[in-house]
Amino acid sequence: MADADPVTDLRTAGAIDVQVEPAKPRRRWGRLALMFSVPLLIVLVGAYLWITSGRTVSTDNAYVSQDKVAVSADVAGRIVEVKARENQQVRAGDVLFRIDPDPYRIAVSQANASIATAQVDVATLQANFRGTNADIEAARDAITNAQEDYQRQTALMNSGFTTRARLQQAQHAVEQARAQLANAEATAAEAQAKLSNGSAVPGTAPAIAAAQVQRSRAALDLARTVVRAPVGGTISQADRLQVGQMMITGLPAVSIVANGRSWVEANFKETDLNKMRVGQRAEIGFDAYPGLKLKGHVQSIGAGTGSEFSVLPAQNATGNWVKVTQRVPVRIAIDEKSPRQLIAGQSADVSVQVQ
Image (cartoon, rainbow, N blue to C red; front, side, top):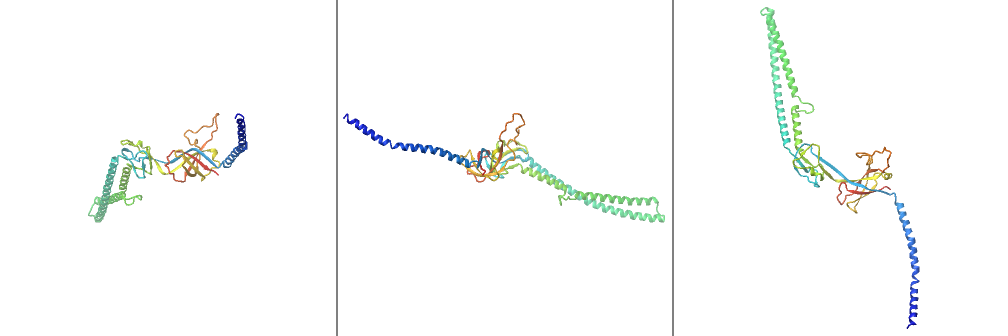
């Protein structure tokens, strides 16, 4: 048994040698394939990057923009009712808040009283004008009587039956009657002029027209005490609306982010603009919605860099000037409707196909 064991061990060892020796070439071929495949893969990737390089330019310095309308009151007054709430959806024409209408109702009543006063004045002028016509007729009759008396006194003077003083008195009466006629005609002309209508408001007396304009203005101010949404959208910055607060004309009271129109304001490096043109296709991604990609196109390229329109532009006329690559705003139009709500100011990534 002691002699058999070594033989068995040798046979076993031989069998092991037979099984191991064929596996060695396989290992060598695997190593060779690995040695050649890795460089080949690197070459292919490099060739792909070289071929596709320069086809797109991209930036992550981009933000969603939307139309924002600042709503202010056209009349001053105290707020008595507020219907707008933060982030509330409103439609065009919805009531946002109301201003105390009582002072403007009083203004409308005062304008109505002015119209009535102007109508009374016009009626008085018409009556005066009719009175001047009667004065003219009376003055003409007085002239006729005075002339007849003067003619009689002239005949009597020629016959020697009257005095020269009486003749001069009759002549003076004729002159007075003619002066009265001239005054009556002048008064009538003045009354007629006051009743005349200008070419701007034909058919209406100027005084009445002025009072009507005042009433229209007062009625417009009264209507403007109800402030409505000029566009549909989402209410923003509504905290400034409080009941009892005094509104000042022209002061923004609330903002509305308009619905239905969004675009992306992308700030590209100036070195990326060489091949960029209006109309080129773009792809837009959003940090808030991973996986969402929207199609768009270059709508316009800004006329100046961001620093050029800043409040405090950079002053480069110094000895320690360092050149910095500038950013140019490029407006990217969104060509398809987003399945998710786009919020003004959202961060976005834009890639533009320049070839």
